[in-house]
Structures are given as structure tokens and as C-alpha cells.
Length: 58
Image (tube, rainbow, N blue to C red; front, side):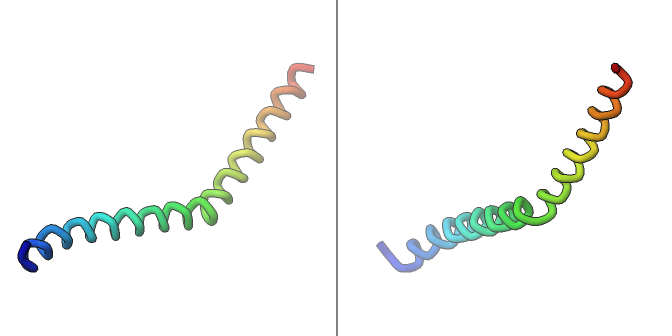
């Protein structure tokens, strides 16, 4: 197998591996940072709404 054929096959494969690795890294960064804040705020808003509804039903 010639070197050029091996290079032609490996470059796209390495590109895909690098892209997938980068996107997984970005996903982890989002999950550990901004997403936690957003989910916490949503939970607090949901709890306030549930508290208001339960107070009205009493």
C-alpha cells in the first residue's frame, strides 16, 4: 500500500475523530457550566409555580 493512498484514507478519518472529540468536549463544558445554572433557575421557577398553585387550592 503506498504512502499517498494511506494518507488519503487517514486524513478524513482523523478529521472526523477530531470533530467528534471537540464536540464531546464542548458538550461536557456546557453541561458543567451554563446548563446547570439554567436548570437550577427552571427548577426554582417551577417550584414557585407549584407553591402558588397549592396555596390557591387550600
